[in-house]
Every structure is written in C-alpha cells, then in structure tokens.
Amino acid sequence: MTMNLTGLEHIARTSEEQGVDTELPRLMKEIAERAIAEGHGSHSYLSVYEVFRKAVPRG
Image (spheres, helix red, strand yellow):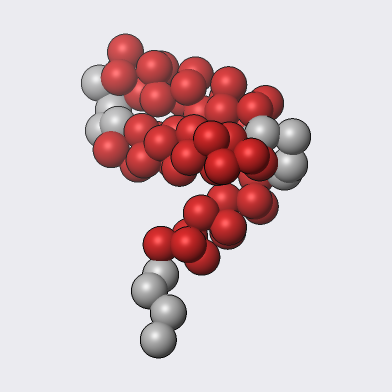
C-alpha cells in the first residue's frame, strides 16, 4: 500500500496540475491512506477491501 500511495499522490497532483478532475484520484488516495493507517502499509492494494468491508454496516 505504501508504494501504491506514492503513485496515487503523483496521479492526484498531476491531475490537478493538468486541470483534470481530481475527485476520484483524491478519493483513491484517501482510501489508501486509511488502509495504511489500519496497518496494511506492507500489503498489496487489494487490502483496500478491508477498508470497504469495515465501512459496510452488518446486520
């Protein structure tokens, strides 16, 4: 995740510099930051699933 975050930061920054909508790149970056904060820094990008899974209320 940490390596992916670096790429996502670059994409968000470049999008802004080029005048491209940054909503999705920034959202992806924020999700990656959450995954890292939750201990998934050394895991693959697929660990964002754990962030999504926590966000869904369970009945």
